[in-house]
Length: 365
Image (cartoon, rainbow, N blue to C red):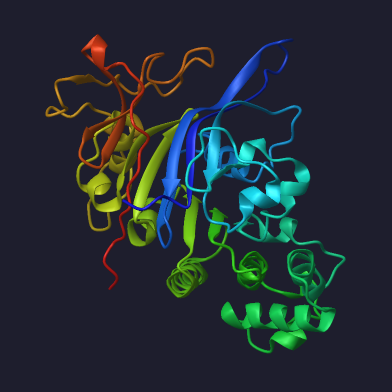
């Protein structure tokens, strides 16, 4: 199996507990994820489940303090010479990978927006209202490429053409307030892709857009991914978007990854109670019902769950002091290519489980 572009191993991030001096709340705990070239990994879950914190940790965008990276490492293999540019190799890291959490600010600036780019949730607040679109797109190009301003403007115009914006030279002179929400989102994608990154972090890229524009944005991302063999980490709570666009899915709740599998396996045979409840709560077109199901209505343990593992029932309101699923629960590969947050019955199987790795692409229509 090829190495992933990026792998997150046992990541834990905490913030100070409000009103409790010296105590900290664990925003994410034991998070394990991996993205391969040309693959879309969808990270789904309720608001507050740790999706955005996990993604922002990749680029060290969590303010420290008050945030703190308590443990784990984020191994990046997508940049030629990344480790050399950082002036270091993390101990124990193989295959020219570098642990992004060990890099200083100067080294991270060589990666942010260049090798790894991010699309944030709200384009109106992410774009600076007092600068033209051209100035904002060119900023990253001038920072990461040794080109003149005229060449940077040509690259910016080309990026706008790639995302389907007509008359790009004119748009470069305009300001964010002059564009619609869908156009601003395309500008955000153009900014992210201007330096041709190997990995794109898309945090709710279609939030607040109507369904027509949403479909256009997602089709655009798929097209650009195929052309550039780019990995995408897609954060969303829309399971319909996941079913149509993802190759692999990670389900998060209470700061932990509770299930990890390819998209078809996860939708057809969800194994963790929370995942089962989440899928059950989706309205189904054409199915009549007196009331919509909640997550708890469908959060059941499957009868055929492997006997050598124990999975705890879903707790919708876990205690901040107790890890969701139990202190000993970890992601275990209960079936080939299918990981679930659970505990082995045999104490001898409590050794550190293998990190989830799934080099899978769905067949293109």
